[in-house]
Image (tube, rainbow, N blue to C red; front, top):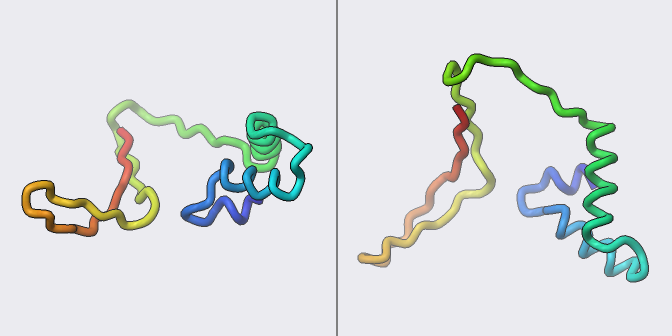
Amino acid sequence: MECELKKVVVTIQHMWEQYIALNPKCYRSSQFGHHYKTWSKRVNPVIHIKHKVDDKMYVDYAGKTISIIDKYTGEIEEVQFFVAIL
């Protein structure tokens, strides 16, 4: 499951839908997510980075290229979506 979740379009919800299709009487979505998060914290602990406020900016791309449509001209432009945190 961890390898699947590294793929761009795969989510925990998507993984649960596959799971419940094969196991209809097993965990519901909330319990599936709870157990995955509990397991994930044991295997991949969160690392806290200490830093001064506004000292650094962290930037990362968030998924695939997206399309933006200009509502006045109808022109479609492909753009990269990224997240920045101060």
